[in-house]
Length: 617
Image (cartoon, rainbow, N blue to C red; front, side, top):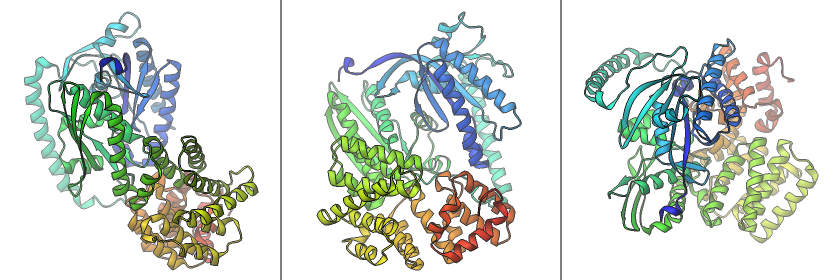
C-alpha cells in the first residue's frame, strides 16, 4: 500500500486512566463502577465543551483527540480540578484518581480509531504522570507555553524502547515539583535504584505472602473477575528493517477488530505494549490480567509483498488453537486484516464463548460485518434488559439491510419480539404476538431448523396458552440436541415451566457443560431459580459464589443468594446482597416466573421480607 492510501494527520492526543483501578475493584466492585461512571460523565462533558473526540476506551482508560493543544490542556486541568472537588465530598464513596498524558504527533486513522506513535507516546506520558497530575510532550509544551496561565516543570528526555520524547509536568496545587525523571542521562543511577527496588519488593512480597497466606480466604470472592474471556494481542514482531509500520498497523487493527465483539474483553493497545515492555510470564498474564488467549505473530516485508504469521494460543493449557500463514501485497492489507480478524474471532467464539453453537453463526453470515453484528446481537439479547433488547432489535434491522439470510432474520425477529413483550416494552403486545406466531409457524413448516423449533416452543408456552404437550413435542423434533447449548437452555426453561424442576436442572447443567462461557449469565440466572425452588442451597452457592460480584449477573440471582444467607442466619450479609440485587435490577415481578413454584416463591418472600420495607411484597 502506498503512503497516500494510509490516512494520516497530526493530532493532539489526550490519554488518561484510573490509578489503582484493580485495587478499587477488589475492595468494592459495585461502588467503583458507579463512581467510575460518574467520573466518565464529567470527562465526556468536558470533552464536549473543549471539542475533544473520544476515540477509544478500555473501561478505566480513555483516549481522545483535540483540535488544539490549548484545548486539550485546559480540558485536562478542569478535569483534575473537578475530580479533586468530587473526592473532597463526603458523599463520594470511592475516591478515584487519574493520570493524564498529552502528546501532539503523527497518527494513522483506522475507521474511527487513531493509531501510531502519536497515540503510543501519549500513553507513555500518562504512565509517567503523577497521581492527579498531567504530563505533556515537548511538542505540546511548545504550543501552549505563553498561551495559558499554567506553569510547567521540565522532567527531562525520556526513552521507552523506540520512542524518545521530552516531557513536562503541568504544575498543579498539591503535587510535588519533580526533578528530571528517568531521563536518559541518568540511566546508570536509575538502573542501580531500580535493581535495589526490585530486590526490596521481592523480599517484601515473599514476607507478606508468608505472613498473610493463612487469612487470604476470609472474604468470599474478594477478587472480581468478569466471565468474559480476556484476549491479549501481543505487538507483532518485525523481521525486516522497514516492517515497523506494518507490524503496528496489524497489531492495532487486530485489537480494534476484536474489540468490536462485546462477548470478549480485548486488552487495549497501551496495555499490550506495556505488557511487552515488562516481559510478563504466562503465569503473570493469567494472575494479573486474567488473560485467556494470546494472539502473537510476525510480519516480514519485501518491497510491496509481505508475509504474515499469526498464532492463537490458549494460555492456561499452552495449546495452539489456530495458526495462519499469509502472503499478501500491501494493497490488500485491509482485506487481510478483516479476514484474519474473522478467523480468530470464529476460533475464540467456539473455544471460549458459545461452543458448537457458534458454528451456526459462521455458516449463516457470509461477510465479516454481518458476522460481528450477529454475535454481538446474541450477547445483547442474552442480557434480558430493555437496553439489550433495543440493541438486539437494532442489529436485526441492520442485518436485514445488509442482505443477511431471510430465514435467519425471521428467526431473530421472533426472539426479539418475544423478549420485548415479556419485558413489558411492546407498544402493541397483541399485534406482536400475531407476528411471532405467523413468522415462527412459517419457519417450522418451511425451514424446520433446530432453532426454529426452540422459539416456536417458547412462544407457545409464554404467549399462547402454556401448552406443555405441544412445546415438548417441538423439543423432540430437534435433530441433534448436543449440537448447541441453546437446545438445553430452552429445554430447561420449558421443563421448569411444565413443573419438572429436576429435568430443568439437568438441562441447565448440560448447557453449562457445552458452553465455555455463560454469556451475560443467561443460564446461570435461570438455573439459580430452579436450584432455589428445589432447595438445593449448596449447589446454588457453588454456582453463584464465583461470579456473585459481577454486575452482568443481574439482580435476581443475588436475591436467591440473599434468601439462602438469611435462612442460614447470616442477616447482615444477606441484606447487603439483597440491596445489591435491587441495584442490579431485581424486581418482585420476576419471582413467580423464575421460580415456577408457589412454595418456593413464598419461601423467598419470607426470607427477604425484613429487607424489603420499600418494596410491595
